[in-house]
Structures are given as structure tokens and as C-alpha cells.
Image 1 (tube, rainbow, N blue to C red):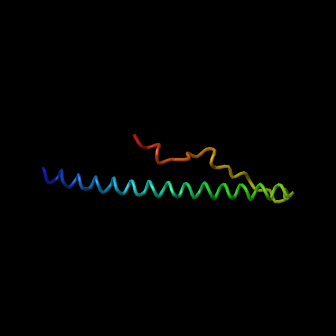
Image 2: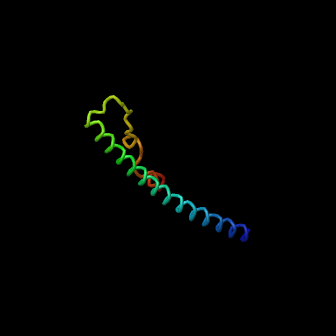
Image 3: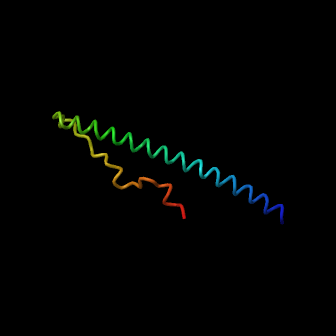
Length: 76
């Protein structure tokens, strides 16, 4: 029984470490995504201000419905 608990404990530690690694990676990807979205919006705004309305591009405002920091929503 004690051996089983030790094995489960080690597995739990590994899972928590991997979860933290993935959470950090998700945060970095989210930050990169937000930066790219901001850059795209700026470019679209500049293009639209120059009178390029013939090339209509749909609104890409994804950030208004997404959670800016999804990793914190699952923490207790």
C-alpha cells in the first residue's frame, strides 16, 4: 500500500510539473497571439484610412470574447 502511494505521489508530482510547463507555454502563446492581433488591427486600420475600402476584410476582433489569461481561470 505504501509503495502504491509513493508511485501515485510521484505521478502526481510529474503531472503537476507538466501542467505548469504547459500553462506557461499557453501564456506565452496567448501573449504572442495578442501582439500579432494588435499588429494586424493596426495594419488594417492604416489600410482602411488610406481609402482601400474596395478590399473589405472582415472584423478580426477576437480578443473581445476571449479570456486574456485563460490559465488563471482554472486555478483555485
